[in-house]
Length: 132
Image (cartoon, rainbow, N blue to C red):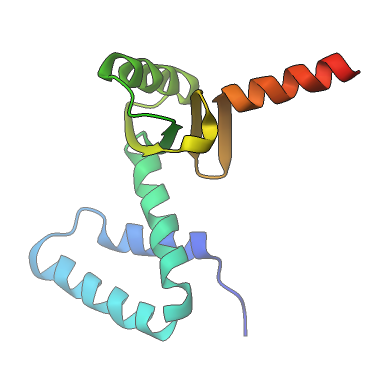
C-alpha cells in the first residue's frame, strides 16, 4: 500500500473545500470526516498540517511567547511587528505562556523553530564564552 503524506492529505482537503459553500461544503466536510475516521490515528497531524496550509495561504503564523510574567501590550506589539518583518507575513497570533524557568527575557516558539532571547540562554552563552 502506498503511503500518503500528511501534507498531501491536508492539501487535498483544502483544495476540495476551497470556495465551497452550502451543500457543496457540507458534502466535502462529510466526506472528509468519513475519510478521517478511517485514519483516526493521523487525524491530529492532518488537522495541524491543514491549519499550517491555511495559515500560509493567509500569510499568518502562530507563535507561543514564553516569559516569566505576563508582558505589557507595547512589548507584545513589538514582538509581533518583528515577527511580521522576519517572516514577511501579515498576521501573527500570539499565545502568551508564563514560564518561571526563563528568569527573564522571552522565548518564542513557531512550529519547530525556537527563538531564545531568555536571560538563562544569555547567561549560558556568556559562561561558555568565558570558559573558552
